[in-house]
Amino acid sequence: MGLQGKMEVEVDIKSCGDVFHELWSTKPHHVSNIVPDKIHGCDVHEGDYGHVGSIILWTYTHDGRKCTAKEEIEAIDEENKLIRLKIIEGEILEEFKNFTCTIHVIDKGEICGVKWIFEFEKIHDHGPYPTDLMDFAIGITRDIESHHLQA
Image (cartoon, rainbow, N blue to C red; front, side, top):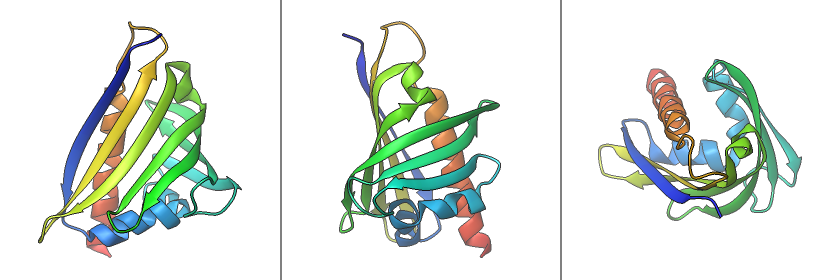
């Protein structure tokens, strides 16, 4: 059994939290238009955007490497602005037996918090933790915030 872990970070944004949640929950295919240098595509393989059980395939560049991630939407909570995605295929699973990402938007009045939560089990006890993936998520959050503030 590998090492299990959980990482989370909360990024404050000035743009609308509702828009940020909607982007990830029902319009993830728009992310590649906003951050084309990081995310290159998002396609539905089964189901529909915004529906639990749907399978989404992402293509992206991480650390100079072209990657894919096939995810199953495990949960969408519109009231709490939360979406949980489980990686079922892709390069991430070269290091991890399982990997789940939760994106939770938290209203704070003038600003919103975007909380990224990674829950994972490493294949081996040694090796890297997904801090580089968390940095990647933070970068995407900042890029989306900048895009919406300019719009």
